[in-house]
Length: 94
Image 1 (cartoon, rainbow, N blue to C red):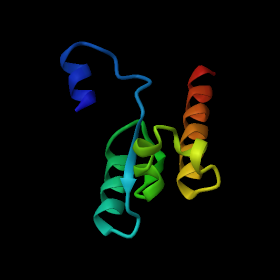
Image 2: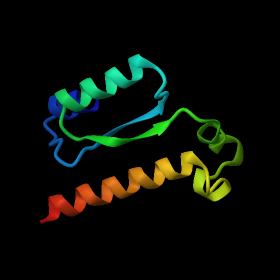
Image 3: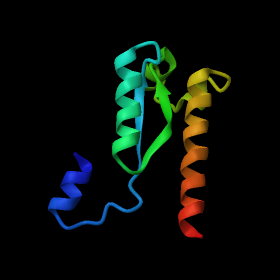
């Protein structure tokens, strides 16, 4: 939807990255959709935020996951996402 909006309003979509959140890796549909999107659209990152209770709890704690559960899998997923974004931005700058 974002890419369509940008195109329809004559904005460039260069530098727009997409990632999946609330991904349940046990579900075939989630895995297939992510693979399909990565194969058919540019800018889809490999990192994904899993469907975990710590992600839901951000609203309760009103803090990012690393602030209240730094050793959790969710925190690791956000760190991986951030590192991938940084890597993409560094590659684009060169």
